[in-house]
Each structure stands twice: as structure tokens, then as C-alpha cells.
Length: 247
Image (cartoon, rainbow, N blue to C red):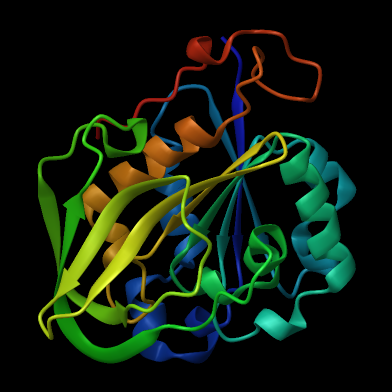
């Protein structure tokens, strides 16, 4: 059984600068997500952060990544353009990309989608969010009901300036009445991209089982699927990769 190689990239600024956030994620958002993914068989997790050399995304790391997760917020502009281009090239060559929460305004998301994606309504009042499952048969929605709720979250509202998604898996509703396209898939080149809205740093969103289940499902969905498990020379069909999200 082939190992699925996942790299989780996190800006890792909030956790080091804000005591409240550090209390929620003492080892960083990247490790909170990574600890969940590591519960599955045959999953290898690497983490990378903004302030590491080359932002932790060296040629070797990218060449050995099947799916890259991206979380950024404070310092989108500090991400080097040459690193963005390397990540883009890997996605076009088949690496999966999962962009989380404020990563909608990241350079890599905008570079791949071909538009400025930072325009949306927002309000940080800790409102209840109901995430509606629009495509219940989609692999990313596996194991979910009609909806799940996040008790406190930052509100994102339309208009969200993104290209029309290839698939709209989730729509969110907030207490203030706004709605938002919160689970969107795209394909660029050989790569699959999934944007997932929940994950504001001041709330324990990445400790919630439904949110982690979506991320685990998305990792499996985004893995290279051109008849092989990776572009790195492995030949096993993707169905043989033992990724389980039933936790």
C-alpha cells in the first residue's frame, strides 16, 4: 500500500503573536490538522511555515508532496513569488492543493484561479455558521449529513470574487443572514484544487470533527488520479492508498 504524502503549509504567525490563538493551537494550526491526518493509515505528513528557509517549500519537499494544504492570513505579501511559481507548477503537474479560510487571498490561489480573490464581505463577531452540503454524493462530503454547524466563526459573505467553481460542494449561512460559497473545487492542469472556508484562528474550528472530516476527505479527493498515486514514479492505483477519515 502506497503512502500518501501530505504537506501542510501554515503562515504560523498568529499562534506565535497572539496568546489566545496559542491557547487554542499550542503547536500551530498545521499540527492540529496534521495530528488528525496521521490517524489514518499510510499517510505521511510534513509541515512547512512561512519563516523557514524557502518557506519550508524546497524543491525536495514539493517533489515529495501529493497534496499541499495552505493556511495564510497576516502575511500573504511576504510569500516569495518564485516559491508561488514552483507551487503552481507542481499543481499543474498533478499535485493537489487545499486552500483553507483566509488562504482565499493568498498569492498561490489567485495565481491559479487567474483573478483577485480577496474581495468578500466579512465580520468577526463569532457568529454561528451552518455549512450546508450541496453535493451529498461528492467524495469531499462523504460521511456528512445535510449540514453541520460551527458554533462561533468569522463571517464571510458574498459577493466572493472567484471564477465559477467546477463543483460547489458546500454553502454557508450565518446568523446575520449572509451566505457564502464555502466549499469549491477547481481543476488546473493535472491538479485538483479545493477551497474550504471555515478556519478562523481565534476559534477552535480545526478541533471540530466535521471540519477535520472534510479536510481528510479533500486530501483523498485531491490526490493525483491519473492512474497512479503520484507523479513521483509510483504506479499503484489511487484506490489502494489507505486514507481513512472515519475518526
